[in-house]
Amino acid sequence: MQYPHILKVATYNIHKGFSHFNRRMMVHELRERLRSLNADIVFLQEVVGEHDHHARRYPAWPAEPQYEFLAESVWGEFAYGRNAVYDQGHHGNAILSRYCILRAENQDVSAHAYEKRGLLHCEIDIPGAAQPLHCVCVHLALHERGRRQQIGALVERLLREVPEGAPVIVAGDFNDWRNLAGRRLATELGLSEAFRDRRGGAARSFPSAFPVLRLDRIYVRGFAVQHTEVHHGYPWSRISDHAALSAELALS
Image (tube, rainbow, N blue to C red; front, side, top):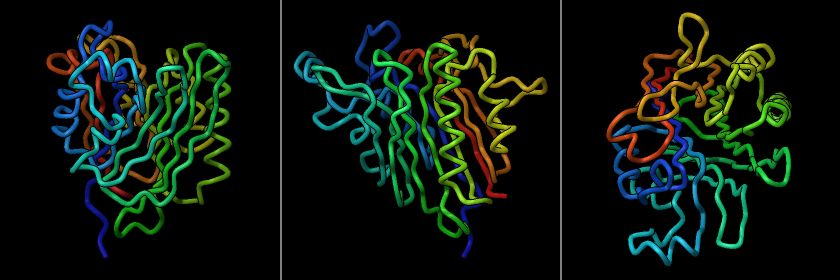
């Protein structure tokens, strides 16, 4: 039995379905742009599961949760990790997959009560692969102390939950200004940054109109990176303040 020659993945902070500065509701255009990536697995951050106020205010607001609306008819499997809960609803991370999600768990790694964060961990059955693929979608804290704690929780989780030799993808919005997370993930877990340039820097992904900061990442283990792309500028800059990242990976 042969595994797919190439696995295409993408990560995107979708800004809760609104454009930069919340000027426009962009959920429908977002769905079309995500589909244009033709990714097998999509890691999403700031995904709204429910929001009563938006549902009343915007006639075109989807009736179902954003992750279901975005996945419809393309990604048959999805998982959602509810992180931030408020009076009007909740939001968090999501993983959309063309392949069967065998198990999903969301681990609360919030550094404090005012900035809720989670690690959404899925095991995915890739046809022909010797072991399930472990995928973790992350959105780390804005402050460095919180990020250090959350990277520590991520390292502990993967060491505990992932069998030796199993393929791993960790992707999302790391808010990691100084690439401290990447060094630790490489040293302790053997993960490599898919977009790493000649000087070891990750892709520039923020703001999406003209990316300067290296906030979004795709880390992999057990794959050879075939191609990477930063999706920025028009029309992506209309949808979110972050650029989308995609990578084509071959199981090694």
